[in-house]
Length: 348
Image 1 (cartoon, rainbow, N blue to C red):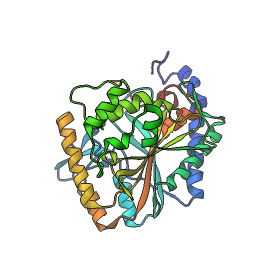
Image 2 (cartoon, one colour):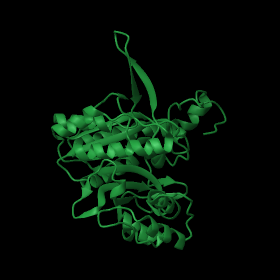
Image 3 (cartoon, one colour):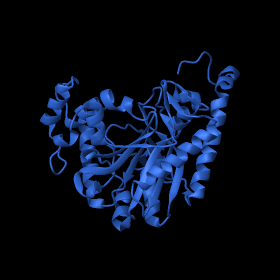
Image 4 (cartoon, rainbow, N blue to C red):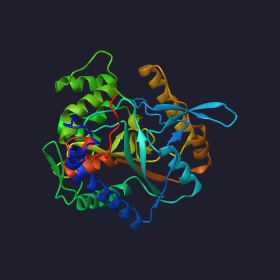
């Protein structure tokens, strides 16, 4: 964000103070919602063996020095997910965390290299149970901020009710594409079918594009801007190739138990019916490593302790990560993420 004065000068703080004070009230309101619903707040280490396996995420690396002088490479986590799931295995019950997380190479109006993520898990629940949590949290956040709607880029979103839309319905409604017709019965992508559909609606097709590349280009151009207004949108049931750490949907192997929450056109949260099969999780991690090496020439190590925890027995659970800074932006109608940060990371 280009400011008239450095963030540490009184004029800058004065301009941001109302939003920063709202940030504190929103955090308190969210904690009250979780307390009323029987959650325990936890804290997990930011230094991890594996920072996260999503191929496009870039982490910050560092070294841990042992008393004997030996050194071991660790990373600042991109999410507290692995550590929190280990707590589920240990019997923590429902848990939440407002965690500082780090993602390198991400800086824009809605991204910051260090930010706050709200993550919570419900053992013994399905992923749809998280939708009610989201609505209660959004309503509490807006009330704490003193607003009547969430706002982003001239769009308004009222959390009084939520719109629920499957990914397939969103493609049909906003792009005129039958997405499920571009998937085989087992969920394998039919790239030529999606390529033909993209060409039919005039979406650019670059040489070497994969099914995923085409999916995201159609999504970003035709679908995402229509989501989350006039009410938040729960975009549910993603293609299984985008399952990440979620399990397949019972009854339809083409889909995964995953949803994303959109508010005023902005992605706010990502939720899963959590995968508990350690063998399948290892297979997905290996695929993520291979894709990251293909794209960026390197890959992060697998957290073997996490896979051991899954093998020990993680309860059936639902989990979700929500961008806290983005929530404050939406609740205070901020145009840039740095307007809701007390102090930004210094520019390179």
